Amino acid sequence: MEGKLFIYNSLKRTKEEFVAINYPYVGLYVCGPTVYGEAHLGHARPAITFDILFRLLQHLGYKVRYVRNITDVGHLENDADQGEDKIAKKARVEQLEPMEIVQLYTDNYHENMKALNVKSPSIEPRASGHIIEQQQIIQKIIDNGFAYEANGSIYFDVKKYNQTNKYGLLSGRNIDDLLENTRQLDGQEEKRASLDFALWKKAKPEHIMRWPSPWSDGFPGWHLECTAMSTKYLGETFDIHGGGLDLLFPHHECELAQSKAALGKDSVKYWMHNNMITINGQKMGKSLGNFITLKELFSGNHTLLEQAYSPMTIRFFILQAHYRSTLDFSNDALQASEKGLARLISAYKVLDGLETAEKSTYNVEELKNKCYQAILDDLNTPILIAHLFEAVKIINATKIGTEKLSKEDVSVLKQVFELFVFDILGIKIDENAGNGELLNNVVSILLNYRQKSKENKDWSTADEIRNELKEIGIIIKDSKEGFTWEME
RNA sequence: GGUCUCUUAGCAAAGUGGCUAUGCACCGGUCUGCAAAACCGUUCACGGCGGUUCGAAUCCGCCAGAGACCUCCA
Image (cartoon, rainbow, N blue to C red; front, side, top):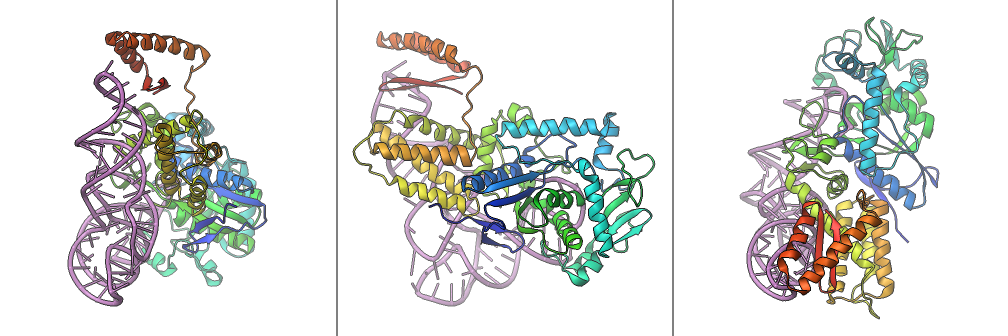
């Protein structure tokens, strides 16, 4: 009995019990990356957050179709809004074909996600592969009277929509405020109102990414792809739509309006948003230029980094904060995560060799329940991790005999680790490269030799072996029974 | 300027109207040939000022500071 899952719905601004629209199936759509640059720490947060949700839902027995898109067209540059999109701009700069850029950074994203042990989504559609679907949505919106054409471009008529619907529901905005406050951008003379947004944009002659359409040769608007692809793969209504908090407005607000204008109903039951990662208290973002790429984190190759951090350290660091809170980056915080994670994993490894007792002095079932409660409460991973550290404490105390665990409870603890640490939190033990039988044997020979040196009180030889092994990343842990070792 | 959010110990980060969060660091101890690891223990909190309450860090108000969105961004 696991209990009920509660998730925070941005639309309602409250935690709600998760009830699948069409049990046991769950449709989950998450806004993926725009592939025009290296994946950075910020990209890791939604990927990991919704990876946890994906894993949890599957564990709870749901059949989840998880769609996470790749945006490879259509996002306009704000300052170069003459109809040049990000991908095309980057392409011109680097003298590459746009699709080369897309391929390069899609691969880069995938490599990084794999390193972070983020599961592949069920479907990973590309915007460029769904131009026809996007055009069909535009046509529906036009037919329903919520869009107009100007010069070959199609715009969404927000005021018209607002007459029969409410624009701003998701982001909590008032349309009158928006009309007053939206900054006047260049090239908006085609629009009837400043907050109208493009559904289809006519391409300038020099613009390379373009597709034919009934209205003009051009490309789809900023927000359309998610509507088109979520509808195609998850149906007109689906359970959960996720993404970064920075996408809430205007992206998701526009998406919500578009979908409703096209389909005549609300598509999404639960909207979920992860908060940002900050650096020195400020959002880490592409446009601010203060981001650290995942590759840099993994290699330690960045002026802000004191050392390299393994993908699992990054993952654990992200999970030690609740997904709806900002998370502040620092070397100290990352190093704390690194050490904490090592302790967690060590405790798990200790489990197998534990001496068991008749009766436990600790209530393991209760701990397990607390773990469930934590993760089911809006994915409260920091609380879950706090409980897991309680398990660490018990395991270590059992090892030295100040607590006792029965054989059954040891196996329950093992299950707890396997379920929560590995299956749900998605931590994997880095079975370090080359750590094969041969290495094991070689290290064993050395360590046995060291043990003999110790018995002969030949401390200098013993220390030399210890130090030299440490230099190549092998840590020896002495104990009363002998020794164990692990890779750094 | 508008809308919204946040402010917790050295760092990071949960939670809660009355009960030690947690991790890392620090300090003391156990263990060790010495370390490391592990364990035990101690210290250090809830931005400021008021209000509600038997009791508030937790609810309300004001003030201060920080941030997010309003423009592409995870």
